Length: 111
Image 1 (cartoon, rainbow, N blue to C red):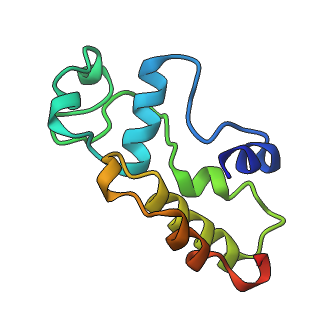
Image 2 (image 1 turned 180 degrees about the vertical axis):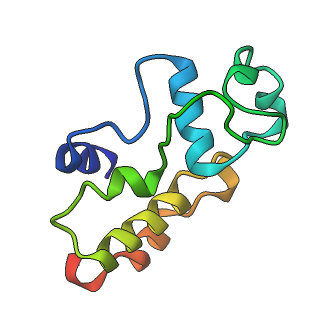
Image 3 (image 1 turned 120 degrees about the vertical axis):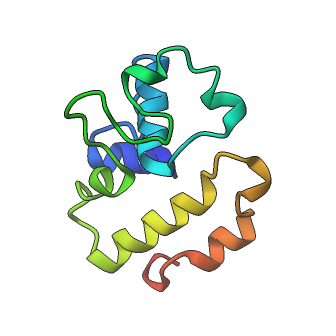
């Protein structure tokens, strides 16, 4: 699924050039990381305040902005894809939806 987003939009879903870029993108998309990771991110203060407010400049990235590039999708399809990806990509594994739930979330025109 993520590869499809990459192919259709021409961009990676999350930054992959370095760890800090990836962590910034994940934080923009899903919010503050779990405390056990947040505290260990050495350069976090360069980008985010303690309560996950961005302080590092003008980088504005989130899942919706990246998916907006998928202009061949109808707005309701983009919204459904965003909702599904948010449910699939939860930071904590136990909070992620299972494959059967993914199938239930697919828009009817995709099945």
